[in-house]
Length: 334
Image (cartoon, rainbow, N blue to C red; front, side, top):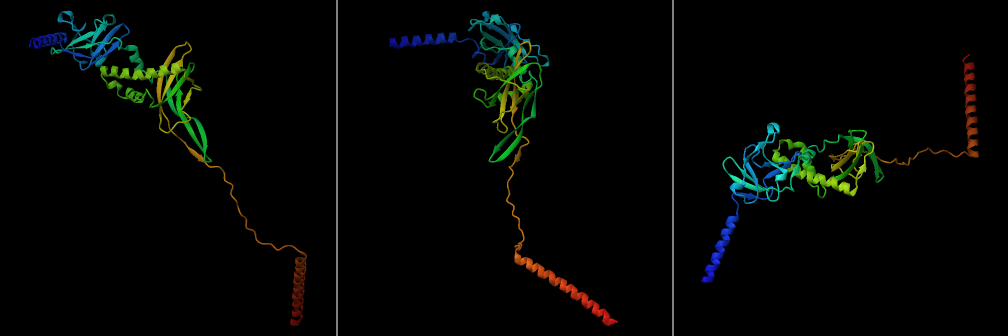
């Protein structure tokens, strides 16, 4: 009995200690429900999901901070014009391993906290890079850059070839890497690019940062792999032709690298769809056997000459007889 009471006492004490260790309010996983942007002036701007347009109070403190440990600050506008958002602003040096919990108090008194991961902070420069992707190097799609031909089963197929024409600085040098989509590790890159060029502007700032993180991860990995593998190919005549072994309606991402005369390097990405156009089929000339039907001719022999002579003599005799009879008839009439 005493042993049971002792065990019960130990269990109650353990439960009490666990209860004491649970912090006030709900605690989310690291960076859950928030997006962080480090600005060029060294501040970290925190966007809270659902509170972009609603003012709130926030405090940066350690885990399990008491009310006395929290210095509440009112949220401020991020100065983004008509789409201004309410944000928390933290100095980068204040976010440490011991001081990495953001406590948020809404207008109705609801309080929550989230652990901030300082190693998972997007930067303002990366955000700008994502937003300008496909726009940094000027190009235009072309459908008639070249022509190709191939022969299959004796039939020659000729078709025009399209691709990208670089219309940017003519004095810079360009190189490229072309990857067929979908590709391992970049399965969502085409969808993300379409999203970037279609409804990105309609997103909330929280959603924009979340999207930019995903896009930058795949896009930057593609560039790093191209650099590491040294797979860049020189652009010739400011044109990039679609691959020789392409199929109809295939998608490719074309990474571009521009090196200006002063050595400045610029990266960009373009998305290209292949197509067939102006296909002509030319069959080889055929040799046709033409038969000529000729009338039969009698062979020329000695007998045939005699026959011709006799025929001529008979004709002459007939003429002479005709003339003679004509004269006799005239005399009879007189």
